[in-house]
Amino acid sequence: MTRRLTHPHWCGRHHHCTAPAGEHRSAPLAWPTAYGRLIATRVLTADGRHRLELRAVVDLDPTEQAAGRQARHTAVLVDLAVRRATRPSLQRPA
Image (cartoon, rainbow, N blue to C red):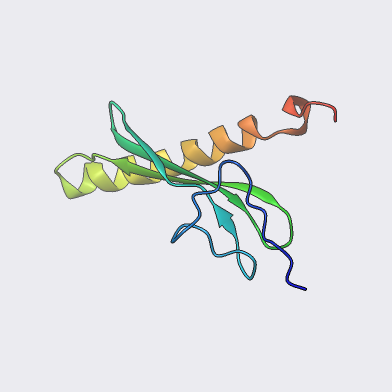
């Protein structure tokens, strides 16, 4: 007997989804921002963990020195924002 694969309602299926061997993945959502673009994909891993993949496309200064400084600063601030957004005090009780 073959077991039927059940996808979460948000799963993009087709080429986005690699379940049952891999992951359920949503279709990427992209939106323009003042700094460039933000792309988000929801993931359910093969071992049952829920994740969010984020990709930011950021326009940098045309000069090398300023662009390097902006890139480093942006990476640090993104890390801080994700740490704050996912801290335990923001988790809702089950």
